Image 1 (cartoon, rainbow, N blue to C red):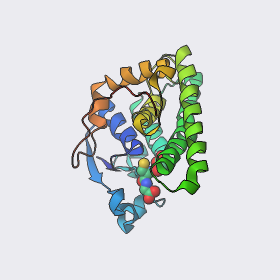
Image 2 (tube, rainbow, N blue to C red; image 1 turned 180 degrees about the vertical axis):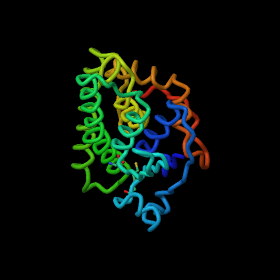
Image 3 (cartoon, protein in one colour; image 1 turned 45 degrees about the vertical axis):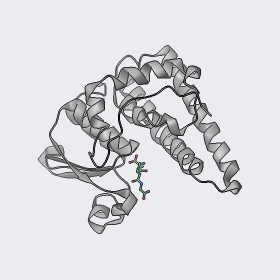
Image 4 (cartoon, rainbow, N blue to C red; image 1 turned 60 degrees about the vertical axis):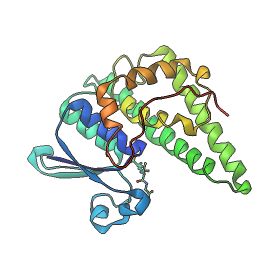
Amino acid sequence: MIDLYTWQTPNGFKVSILLEELGWDYRVHEIDIGKDEQFDPAFLKLCPNNKIPALTDSEGPDGAPIALFESGAILIYLANKAGRFISSDPIRHIEEIQWLMFQMANVGPMFGQTYHFRSKLEPEIAYARARYLRETHRLYAVMNSRLEASEYLAGPDYGVADIATWPWVSRFEWHAIAWPDYPHLRRWFDKIWARPAVKRGRAVPRVGAIWAGAFPEQSGD
Ligand SMILES: N[C@@H](CCC(=O)N[C@@H](CS)C(=O)NCC(=O)O)C(=O)O
């Protein structure tokens, strides 16, 4: 049995989307980071870095249980176990890992900082706000260029790099973007959002009022 410890955030959605794509049974454990549940000693045993997501699999490698944290590692683990959403061809495989690392090292941290500083009002952080927003827009442009040349981020096939990146772009209303500047990214975004598994995974954990699921056009501010 797979147990997923998660919350309604982009890093959590990555794993629930992949599990929904795989169609595997899994139990969801809500870790409300707004209530600091990520610091609970029981959760820290699974993730010493006090961040969701974490995952346990009672049937890990060689049939032994395994506990994992870091969303990128969890995606690689699940995709390898399934033999899906990551290619076994050596070149395709490393391209998938490359774009997954691009998400883990760039899109996640920079978009996260943009949200953090744009949600604060103190004037002394104007520099930080501008710096991270600029970096966020640069990353939107990198993805847009890549998707002009490629159907999906890592190549012709939908895979873990897309599953890792899509939830972060789905928070585009935090990023003051003008969608007309990124037509290829928008094409990719809408195509992935049309997948039923993505809609199901984006709604995990199902707590409180779930976001309505309609993506309005955004012209920036
Ligand atoms: N690199 C980590 C980042 C995880 C992460 O930042 N999780 C956030 C939610 S999206 C969190 O749990 N924050 C709680 C905290 O920092 O205390 C991963 O990809 O798993």
